[in-house]
Length: 209
Figure (cartoon, rainbow, N blue to C red):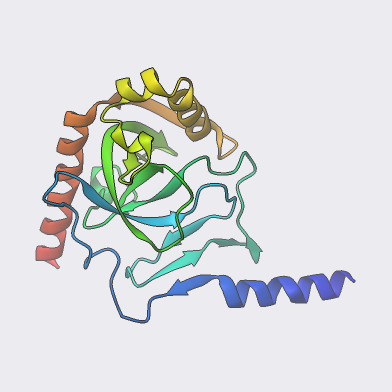
């Protein structure tokens, strides 16, 4: 039985370790970041309500399941209470204390399918440090016909959805099993400046390469 379970697990890893996009769309470089209505686009890596860790590949062509020691990586905490992904055409350079990846983004709203490109409204950001690296999380709400899409700031969120932002803070600080330090929380205006800063870093890196 143990051997059979091991074989089934390996098959699962081989079959479901990544999602490829047949149209050759690059989810990092081909997706525009800004929309004319002052929203931005985000790419979903991890749907709300799930435990498995997925992330965009370095080349931007597929979303891969994280595998550690031949094991599918799952968080040992509550399932993601929000959708999680990244902001295209951004990068936090290693030489500036980042991990060389795109800006992470939290998308508050109903569960959204992995690989979806969604229009969101940033309302703030958590400036966080994880293993001595900048690990900022943009906080946003999905643009839809839902009431929560009318939220325009963290103050709005705290006023209309009591406790929701506290849940986000607690989850981000503890989901890895070790405390992630949140150095600061910034508002909507500062968040757009923050996104633009790392969008410009991405464009500069792309030009250099």
